[in-house]
Length: 287
Image (cartoon, rainbow, N blue to C red; front, top):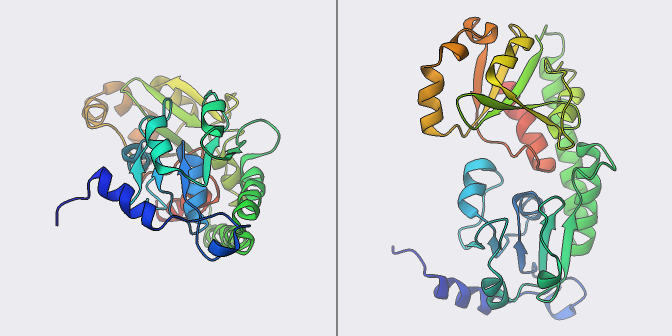
């Protein structure tokens, strides 16, 4: 079957035009939501609503992966410069975004109400903030029950994984993302991953200072500081970087690499919400 054109998608979305809670005629129908970035998109999908459009859908599928975007979801262009013309055509009931992207809110507010998720604003630990923001978004969308269920299911998933680790001697671990063959992003204090590690009673081998978003950007040689700790590397790793890493003597001589303690796990959005937290715990248990 040939893929749908943008015009066909827009026409189909128009036929199923939906309203937010407060419109009795559409109370049972989910709203039409456009997401300017991936954190709020993950949250919306986790509450059982498929967004009509998300910025950089390919990036979402590569870097976030789960929960999956619906097939009908359109691409809004880059997260730094979403397509205003397409947003106008879509006429969404709600636009969602997240703190930290530096976008001027005014043009979006002229199209539809704007809901901003203030993750990593320094007011709360990321996991606790994810719980609170999930409840807030659920209340706005008339999905309070779904939001509370997500909060409870995420806590239950983490508790289940914690029980799997209980009684086992787990060596410290560090979590990284690779972007080139000389530098890595290492997640530590202030990150969602650190909050999950704490709930799993696991020790983060990376104790160096982090940025406000909960990571350090360091040269690969600085990973010598974690010794033979387990190293958890997040996909995706760009193919050309993987080739260079495999050929790098600097990488090969790291104690954790020489000890065979490197594991690669599927993508998890480090700046995500509860779905990312549960996904991280689950994938760690399999690593």
